[in-house]
Length: 463
Image (cartoon, rainbow, N blue to C red):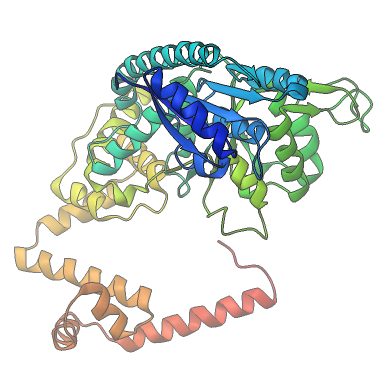
């Protein structure tokens, strides 16, 4: 924690910016001055160890917009507003939104200096407490996001940092990678842990019911609404709202959610009464929301995405596979009251080589099958492999790898060469020795393409 007191000063009037900067410098403060809010925003983050001073009226983004941005980054970031004589009502509104204090022009330099010093001391205390809290979070998080890989360590570090703030977060990751677990950690280890954690799968809510589910309804709002019911957003007041598969949310609902996030108020279906809500939004998606503007509103994306967090798939955490498998095996053995059967070398190798398209969820299912003895056919296959000579096992392994590559490439030799990193002659020799004919995979690929085309024109394919 630096000993100096930092100030980020924003004012579009050069003379005022220079005068305030000189006064604060004389008072022993380190001042970084900016002529616009847009420029200052680039310097702000949730760990900014100082005070933000901003003029209320400026060209472009004004002081209120800058205040809102600072509050989204960190509600504990002190913001001091400089106002004109006729702006007292707006200054009071700024205080209601979370500004630390305000001074009205003209003002005594000593008064501003006193306010900034007190705000700076408060900021130091907040950051010190946050640092101590993070020291407690780290070991707790290691028991929830399990892994020794670099990807797991990086994920825990990001969750530790974000849990200490109230910023909106968008989680990206494949199905089953653990986005819900990460969202739950952000809630349980954050300042809203005592509030409700409300998880909503946006893809599972019919469009006709979306407004009622998210915003609630009053009695008589529609047929069957015999009594008032709060929606998911209202239920998350004081806590966290986790919006899983948010890219599936209907466009009309996206617009209403945007307004709630901006105003922090909602109206139930069938009501004209505004209800104040205070919650932390955490969204999750399998696709890039920014690149999907036809399906997702860009203004809602920018409102939600103060911070992005990538949840890596299991294939990027290979060092964690056996560790996680042991963890899930122990949990399943306890739940089903079974003994833990040790893994053979062949089984461990198969676990490590698998790509795990279903990620953590698929691995957990595999561990449960192992505990229940439902993988005995695979065990028998592994036992047969162990009875082979080393050369036979190597040939079987090479054949499986090359065959899988041929399937994925539709028999295109150039693609297989590039993927496996071997010359054409070497690949041809291996295929001849292992009895692999590329024409089989070309024909299979053509049949699949024909089947897919037929499916698009008629009955949907069965998955």
